[in-house]
Structure formats: structure tokens, C-alpha cells
Length: 451
Image (cartoon, rainbow, N blue to C red; front, side, top):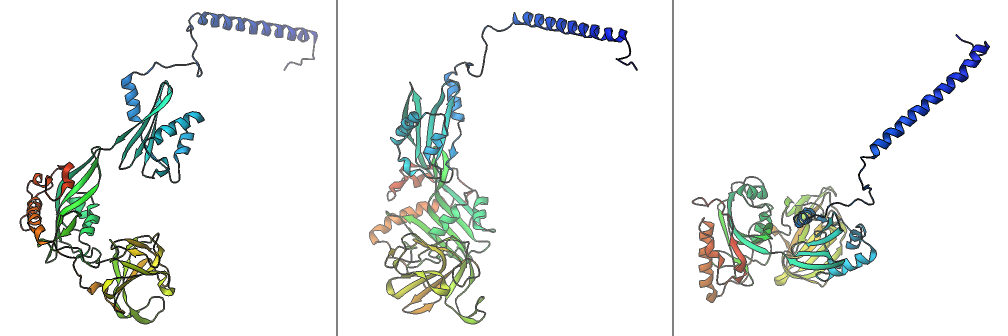
């Protein structure tokens, strides 16, 4: 190896090499600058940057496509319209003007969780439109024109269609209805109609048959909900139940014109299961001894609404030791009902308050001496506890004689519809003007013979 300190030749060679390296670097730099100057002759006349770039103005078709593509977003739990607007690229005065425009058509303080909103951004002008969709009612649209916000109101077009469905109970009622071609929500409407004669918690049997003519509600052509059931046949074992909606205000009647409504509902819960029955000697799971059980236990999740089975006056609504939160209601003819182990009371339920049949008075819980969420439902007659499942149902007053011809004509048309006939004659019933906006939906399968 060379030793840099070894001699005069080496000491002269090192500076010469450094000079040559410097010349090479300068030559390379000159070539790069020359190449850059040549490329500069082909640069565009206008330079684009994030701050100065502008895109071609969209035509009207593109603007409409942008507006249609703006998807509605639901309001988050606890979120207010003010919070939504603050998240948008708007100055404070523009937010105020937009809020004022929207408030011309709806009370912004009463927006609900099921309502939604959409913000439309124009590629050239920024935020150009803001929409509020009010569930079940319509849509408020605010658009910016000439630097100002202008709003308009478009109510939803509500259409009610008639439809028909029939089927056999194979498992859960909701699933059976869905297999038959209708919304499973129809099961809850059926429970409402037959609530005085059929306990949907314990009376349903595999093989039961059902047939219905009912309303379907559409908003702007989209399915919204199940409307009223107009006619219902339900074969429960060897028992045939019939219900026909009639009159103003409407009620349900059997084939003979007798009202289905009774003094008491069959059950205080729409859907549940009986977990313990009325007994004069039952082993208590917590106290570990035999004692009377003067009620019927319905197992249901915490928070399930509990209904008053008959109209009356609240006699007690407080904590009652082993019964936990309890409501007692006094009814005509010496009846009293009790609802035990509630998780909470419904708003306004207190002693002395009048309640109607079907009103929600509380919610299922496990307060007091309870091993799991359930409702202990009890009935007393003239001071003596009786078995709620063995009660005889007293009907409401029947139709007047002058109403019977109209009812029988209406029932005949409904029976033809249930049997697979044309639903069109049901669109103009003399006694039911609510059908003015009805249309006939797609028919389901016709009823089988002997159903």
C-alpha cells in the first residue's frame, strides 16, 4: 500500500487529482442546466397548483347526477342539526341563513333519530344543496342560488295498497308469514286483532292456518309499513276465528257481527311465553318453600312493554317488597289487576291516573324476588285472586240493527277477497271512506279449498 507521507511525488499528485475532480463536477452541472433549459421550451403556458386549479364547470345533467348520488346519513344518537352544519364548509352567517331557510318548513327542535340529512357538493361552487328527510312525512331541500339559500317542501306521496296472503304455521308465526310472501311485521298486527280471543304466547299450534286481506303503506313508491288488517281468518286446532274491520271508528267483528273486543285482553304482553301458572301450592325458587302463586308468569326480555289488560284507575304504582316495582289497576265490576317485578313504570303512571285498555303501564324486569326477567300478572275479583288463564271474556256491545245490512255486504266482499277473488271491489266500500287512496297490490297465492 502507498504511504501518503512517503515522498514528494505523492505529495504533488494528490492536489492534481482534486483539481481534476472539481472540473468534472462543474462539467456535469453545466450539462444538467443545459438539458433543463431545453425542456423549459415545452412547458405549458399556465402553471396549475392546488390553489389556482379550476375544473370545467359541470353541465346540468352532471349536477343532477351529483345531487342524486348524495346519500342520506342518519342523525347519530344525541346529534343535533347545529353540529351537522358546523362540520360543513360554511361560514357562520351562511349556517344561520341555511338554518333559517330549513326552519320555514319544519320545527328543527323536533328532529327524530329516524330522520336523515344529505349535503350536496358542487365541484365548482362547493356546498350547493342541503336536504332534510323527515321519516314518514316528506323532505325539506335548501338550495343555494345567487349566493342565497332558498328552501322548498316536498311531502311524501302516501299510497295504500290492498294485498292478500295465506299460509300454514310452521315454526314461528313471523317466519311462517314471511314464507307466505308478506312482511313478518304482519304477525304483530294479527296479535292486535285477535288479542281478546287468542293468546299468542300459548295458544298457537303447528299446522294452524291463516288468511288475511290487509293494507300495505308506501311512501314515494317504497314500502313503509303494514296498515290495517281488513279481514282475518285463523284456524287454531279445531277452532275457527274470524275478524272483519268495520265502521268509523273502526272495530273488529266476527261473522255474526259480534265485537271481538272484550273487557280484558288475553295477555298483558304481545309476545312472550308462560313460565309458571296459577297455583295454590308452588315451590318458590328463591324462598325454597311451598306457597301459593296467585298469578301467571310470562318470561320476556327486560324492557318489554307491559299493557293494561282492561281500562281502569291506577290504585298502586310503587315498590312492593317481593313484588318489586308493581302496578295495580282497579276496573269496573269488582276486578283488580296486578303487574309485578317491573323494571320501571311508564311515564305518567301513578296512583289515581286513568288508563285505557292496551295502554303501556310499565316494562318487564326482575325487581323484587325474581330469578330472571319476567312479568307476574294477577287478577282479583271481589277481593279473591282468580286464574287469569281461566277467565271468561265478556264482549263489548254488538252492532246496532240498522248497521247490520252494511256490515253483511262488506263482510261478503271481504270473504270473496280472502278466497282469492278480485280485490278491486274492496276499493270503494260505502262505510269505509279511508280507502280513497287505495290501489290493488300484487295478489298472493289464492286460498286452498277448505281453508
